Length: 51
Image 1 (cartoon, rainbow, N blue to C red):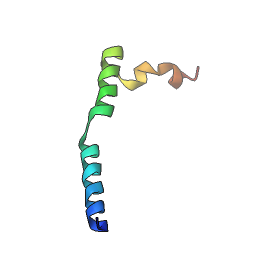
Image 2 (spheres, rainbow, N blue to C red):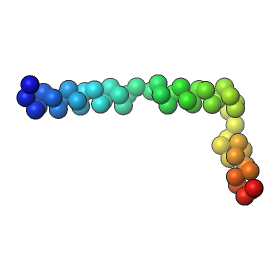
Image 3 (tube, rainbow, N blue to C red):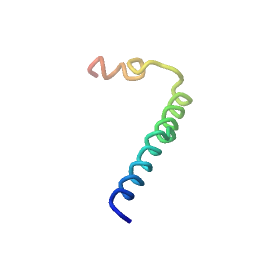
């Protein structure tokens, strides 16, 4: 295999990985079900208060 073929294959695999939403999407859905649709600053208001 020449270098161009390897580079093209790697670029294709990388593009498919970038388009795949599953890892981040799964975490977002899990957090929505766990905490509801609450703004981030309300979930962590104790951090903003300094305590």
